[in-house]
Image 1 (cartoon, rainbow, N blue to C red):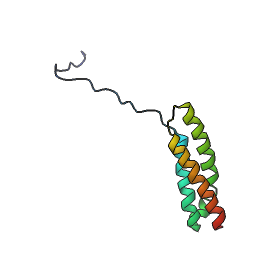
Image 2: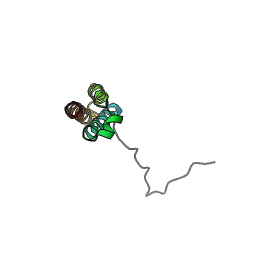
Image 3: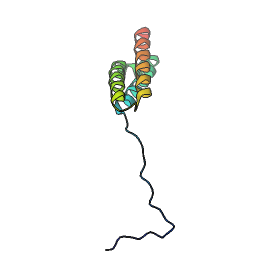
Image 4: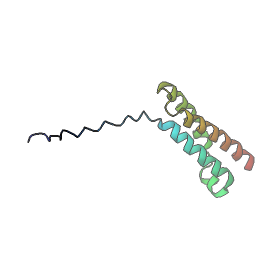
Length: 95
């Protein structure tokens, strides 16, 4: 079967140039957000009691990965560290 031919005025679309993703930084931000919500809602806190700790660990690891990945996810990792630390402090205060 011969390949499809393009008309003279058509161009082949360029591939997307999306950069690398830092999944650990994204998880850190998600866990940090859940930990802040859990600090203010006792039923949620009973389920998500230890989520600030993984948020801090994932945030630090995501930040280290961001240095290796030329900055991909650096802001998310910092936000994950901040929300994880805030969630930890709020959880300890509200217990």
